[in-house]
Image (cartoon, rainbow, N blue to C red; front, side, top):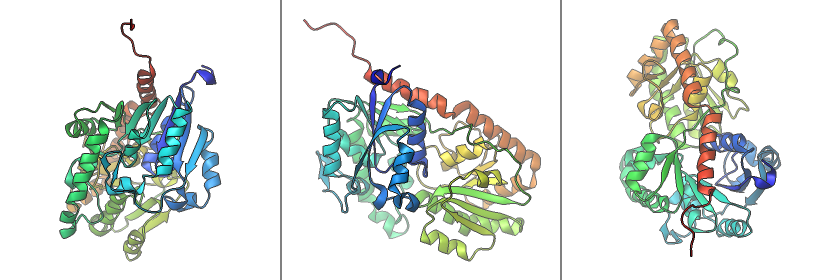
Length: 413
């Protein structure tokens, strides 16, 4: 298909989808896989005021990384303050107010009005209000994490003690926002079937499709056995609170129990932008290494004895688990982290909740090489069967085609 024949898709994102965090990896990978079927452009906020420090310092490098996928990249300065509490008839939750900009809305309208987009794909619920800012193009929204459907699945940094009660109004605002915006889009994409049911329960008028998060099976392959030693590995983008919470839970509650049973065990916390709280908590614990932002997580996964994911907040498929699966690394995950995965507990990964049970599951894998190898091999098969980006991208491309197909029916007189 020639360039001129390919439909134009404009991706609207809160930050440039340079693949450091899981959501950005999803956007980047799907667009890369579909570039031969669609002409992608990007409209996003400049990351100088948000996100990974290394990216923020070098906007030009980010731009060069994006250009092979996106024909045009449009940058808007991120607003310094909060938008009004109500926009386009919507009451905005706090995170949506941080990312609503009149300049962004105007640029979006101008691109659609100029014929630069046959379809606009809005990423993340915090950008969902922009669906009311334009007409004349098909509209798709991706809800990456439906954790907000449940108060106890929502993640606020104040979710303890009296602070939890103080966040009830904000949670209610999020639910109303998801319900209202769901009906604004031709399709809402979620990553799991449980999330699809949750969104339909909140917004029955929405048309919802599940397109799972995937993994690049060619890129994530274990080519060498791990070095001698016992290493637990966790990967995360730590400004995202569920990742910081999981890492702190590892440090404070789980890893000390593992060390009492396996004194030689080490814990590696890899990934981008570790927070000050996380670095302070790790500083006084023997056997812990916080890597800081790394260009490639594969060396850490390759050296892992066990990949650990004691995630307690949020929902959706965790890309970090899929990367461990693809590398053949055995995984121990919380039931929340494992929810939505097309994987069997006890065969493809071990699932445990609570610090004691989680630590016991980790020790089981450390002490049993046959179990460790079997779980790792089964995880790789799961990734191959259900989470190959190529298959998932084709599913999204078919969704685009369905929305862009001219309507059929009797001709008007």
